Amino acid sequence: MSTPIPTVRTVKDLRAEVAKWRASGDTVALVPTMGALHAGHLSLIALGKQRAKRVVVSIFVNPTQFGPKEDFKRYPRDEKGDIEKLAEAGADLVFAPSEAEMYPPGFATKVSLPSLTEDLCGAARPNHFDGVATVVTKLLLQAAPDIAIFGEKDYQQLIVIKELVHDLNIPVEIVGAPIVREADGLALSSRNAYLSAAERKTAPALHQVLTEVAKALAAGEGCDAASSAGRFKLEGKGFRVDYVAIRDPETLRALFGPIRGPARVMGAVHLGSTRLIDNVPTKPNTRA
Ligand code: AMP
Image (cartoon, rainbow, N blue to C red; front, side, top):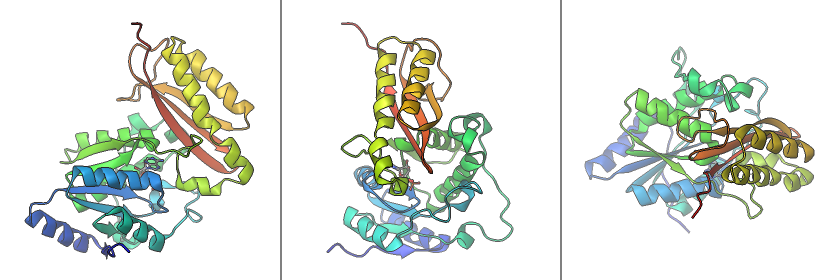
């Protein structure tokens, strides 16, 4: 049995706990989550433990990042199970605020990065990244950690958060963590729980196809041809494709022609009523 993990629900209590750590000179990592924790989330906590003395994990299903027709109501929630997993993983504190604590009546602020969020996932989810940027800004200011850890699974989100921290001079290091996958390549996601047995069999093809696109790019194929081929293959497997895009891994700028340096192959698809995203890195093959 692992030691029970303290849970705080107000910003005041969160700050009081963090202040105690600070008083004894401990460094702090923040891992923001929406709960329904899986091994991908737990890898972020493991990284937090390597990089800081204390790890605080937030669990908050943020309503402002869901569109009106999205899955906010049915998003999986299991706070008790999550807290047990976090105790097992060695996290030090859970911050699980209510909606009223995060968005009290009269809340009026929005953090928005239009140039980074109008395309890719932002095209299909118009207000999503404003919701993410606003809640993450709040969490960073509430917990005031030394580092905050985000998965590369949500690659556009990671870049958005790095940019807002830079632009707003928030004194925190944003650390990206590699994607944790099932044995068949499917990226772990709380939303995988929505997949039917048949969809679950199809789902790993997203990663397979993005990997094939990455290999084609590495071998010198142009971005347009490689992404079109990827889209065609995904459609052939029964996905409805939002995008297959090849982007600069730092700026998310669209790339054209054969790649000359590192690139990220990013994809978003629908499988039945479930939206899946994934991405893989690539770079040109260099001849010996
Ligand atoms: P979520 O609870 O889905 O908002 O995710 C919380 C954090 O976990 C985000 O930084 C995600 O990018 C990260 N995450 C989700 N799935 C994975 C995964 N399969 N591997 C690594 N990180 C992940």
